[in-house]
Image (tube, rainbow, N blue to C red; front, side, top):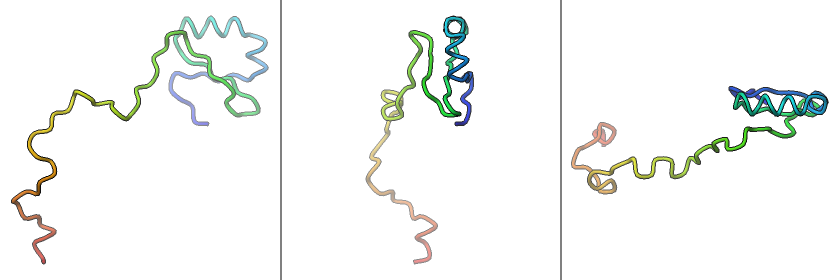
Length: 84
């Protein structure tokens, strides 16, 4: 798994031994902690109230203005059509 920025990885054994300290570290730094088991991510520990990523669909709602008709063809001949 590629490492994400601001994400620390620990083994499940280390997490079990240092659980309270690691949770305090996550709360203090605001960085997510990934607990790994056999080299694969098992769980993520994130600070309470951490922002969830904004979904791609609808991300620009209310921020884009369409000027004119975007479906109607233009009266300009494209270079690609000039050879025909």
